[in-house]
Image (cartoon, rainbow, N blue to C red):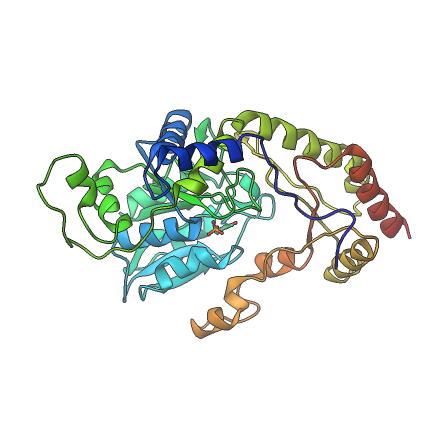
Length: 379
Ligand SMILES: *Cc1c(COP(=O)(O)O)cnc(C)c1O
């Protein structure tokens, strides 16, 4: 069904095709050319990350993270169930077991007060997810991880250019993963990055990313031949994609400022509904700076959410739920989970509705969304 107001419309900054033409003219459309290096450097400088390696997706970056930490059979990894499948697949594909914890009702992020009771002698890592680009309680999570000698991988797919206590999301854990998928804030179709905050992991990350070879060391003249030295895969993106991405990253702050005005527009117009208890608006904690990735509302019941979603879709407005919790999925049940195990996750995911939010949505379009919600709730 074609909606009059789509949920998302990929934003084109302007110079994407020009930079792609430049990459083609320079004669390097393979990996790790000028644009890939420029994107990495820009992200490293802006977010104070020792090393950023671009990847073909955030999924690929999370897979690299799990390989770098040698996660495998017998290991347990703690993560929220309220997330996208890639957070879990990253280590489940290596044989490690997911241990799901419930979320906080305010940010819908992993509830850090439930972390310690989920730790066993098999726990090796924590994969927090910054939902909607709003930071998890990273100070507590890092303190618990250090106390129990666990690694932390931030799934910052939605959190590019967001901050927690003035530190960039993705720059706080041992590793972080960004997404540049076309549904995110900064895009190149499909793309991602691995943020490496523990410098001891850099050398092996280069090898895993380049098919398990030491080709990067060869390029730098550190070895006289390159060969197969470790397990690896093909995690280097094409310059065609990174040239596109560079045009987007040049507008890092402009894109956030524009999205903020769209977010605030909804937020102000739903204030009276929130006060009247007809819906609940998102919360951004005082120590978090958001990138305004999503605008969602929480309805009083699952039935109201489903009916409002249908009402909006019939009005030509594409509004979408988020997520089917992982623990209740076919795969989640194979790990012994059942409905009822994570009550807050189950309750809120059944009542959450994401509204259209993109760079080019106009106030008139947002007014139509607000009016459609009002008409429905005031019935
Ligand atoms: C989008 C997303 C991913 C996957 O990103 P890709 O770049 O599409 O692989 C992973 N985790 C979360 C939380 C996401 O929102």
